[in-house]
Image (cartoon, rainbow, N blue to C red):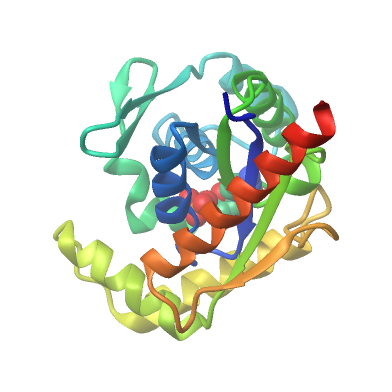
Length: 233
Ligand code: DC
């Protein structure tokens, strides 16, 4: 039987991390975990409940009321996110969540709770997790780490198409501003900022399509899994 590994996919906003991660997980028969969806769900809860996130006690109280779970359908390759039993998948992808999520995910207590949760559900091998700090913080020992980047204009165009497909018309400049703002907050925050782990492979998706980027990761994953198996013998 093939050895199962942990694959960490980090990178800037809108590079196609989750699309890549989902296809890689499906191809390898691995579990897919979208860590960004967790931060988006916390953001939705904080906004809906008007949580004063400048107050640590308020943040901790709110976190204790948040229950997140995922429901993955391998037939459609769709991953639904649930907040306290309610399907919030389409809500958390909206622009008002994207506009607030980096601010909420800077909060140390929020990060601590999410990292704990991610470590727990990813404790088994055979996991693909995408995010910003997976290879550096959540799974520093992941056997395969990928760091994704792409030109911001190309990223914004792709995101605009995705939003349009869901009926949300958004000016390109608004998306560029949002991506740049999030990149800035994510890379400069004090708590586990976005950065490429030293042992991560760089994957620039500006000029390649989804098939090429997923093939790149799948090929590496198979090589790594094989070498881990040989080393285990
Ligand atoms: O992957 P995404 O764009 O859905 O993530 C939304 C935000 O969540 C991102 O701008 C920063 C935050 N995030 C994070 O801080 N750490 C992670 N591991 C994943 C996401």
